[in-house]
Image (cartoon, rainbow, N blue to C red; front, side, top):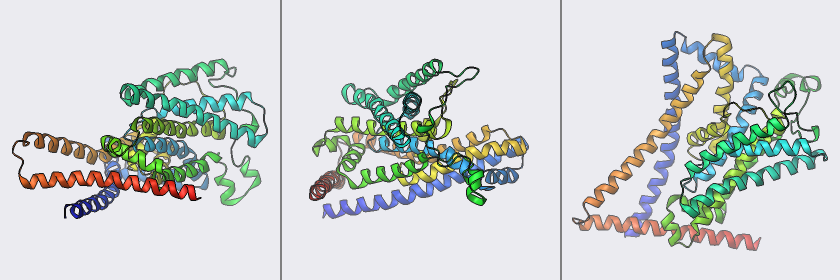
Length: 412
């Protein structure tokens, strides 16, 4: 009887959480735009006119759409990297540093090597992802071995990567410039060059923006991550560790190993964002005076998508689009581009509110249970038994699915 109750509770939680996440995301976006409209009105601008210009900044011409996609590509990948770490209960604040590491490796290999076009690109991307994985695994190792929180480690490593990029830029800086020399032509991954001369109509305007293979790689990465998390043994184990580390240990999962693996994969995805940005768009490394915020924008993208890999595509396009359109808003009405950051910050604030309430509720429930341990009634005992059976069922389900996945892989 108690097992049936546990299954019913579990099914109800899944459906309610899924529905509430979508609802809260939509409400958060709406509230963000309402707060933005209020700020515009206080500053003396017309909110309706401003949002019309914001919309036109993305969809007025095919070229604008192309530029919005170019701006969205890196934050889709960094958001995906953050999302992957979240599945194991890790808060990867180091996406920015891992992005920079990918950029550095991509530039060095793109500039120093002389290889055939396709081979050059493959080597640059693969090595950059490997170095990014190693850089991310440092955080996982320190967390698993010494228990040092990943937020502290990743923030420190962000600055290591930041100053390393400036060191490399000074080594290869172009005269009378604030950036390095460009990479070799064989390392570039831009889809179409001189599109205006090759095509007419929609394609001619769309490909005037530097659309590159990184956008396609981002979509492929999203599909691969979704498959890993939902269809493989590794994915079930990572999610089990993220849901309950103690229960995962009880189920025979090596949690320390999974933490390192999760951070390594997350780092490789963020490094892919960096190398694709250099090979497909910038072609060089700039001298940094501050963080470029691709990694931190990835955090916002992941939070808005509720850490859903498929949702990250849409939240990344949304963020990249409105940040690009913010420049049009400034040109058309003289509105400060910082308004876009206000809208984004407000959206993230409202997105995080349900999480804050869940954390406070969990702490309140835990404290109230502790204070009533001596006065536990039979009804409360039954509730605790249901929760214990629910945890065991989750572990057993994950174990069975993992075994089924391994069996299917062996058959294949």
